[in-house]
Length: 200
Image 1 (cartoon, rainbow, N blue to C red):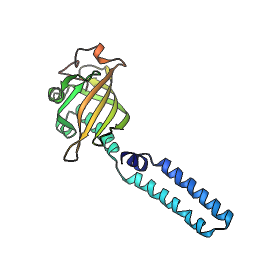
Image 2: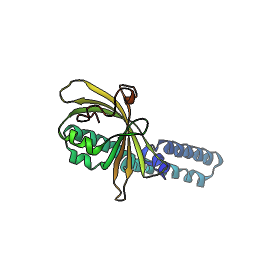
Image 3: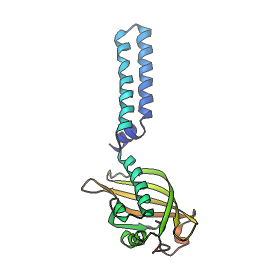
Image 4: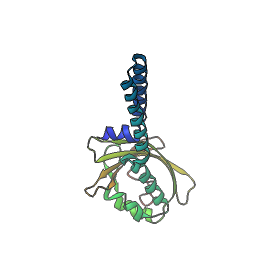
């Protein structure tokens, strides 16, 4: 189901191209053989290609929602608006290092964010992957975070693990800290730097 959603709504162009090619083949065969039914049938792939393109435009997929919500979390962290962040972060969410060890919890970092430690972010989403479990997705996020009191931007790399709850809402349950200035953070820091001023 996830692959169907991806190829129909997130990246429909392979399906559209395939349908257009099918149209061309049917049209050429129909005209070359004088088969009017085949010529008429060749219109169906064109209609289907149009329907796929329209569906991709109007249907918002889970991946597209997570893309937008990732931006919403980062914007809220800089305002700061932890209430808005709580809509997308599970209360028991944790921060893990590359070894999979828990090095901080959202409950610890929430207060720091609420005090306005973060002054802003620039970010890019490097990819969104879906686990075999359809209720789990991961966004790979590259950040450049500015902390209040410093003009220096801190470049970090993260994997944010989202899980869909029983209420149907997607929330972040794990933040996997992958890099700091391109290096393994575990080789530079003991746990989270500025626990009271985290670059989350």
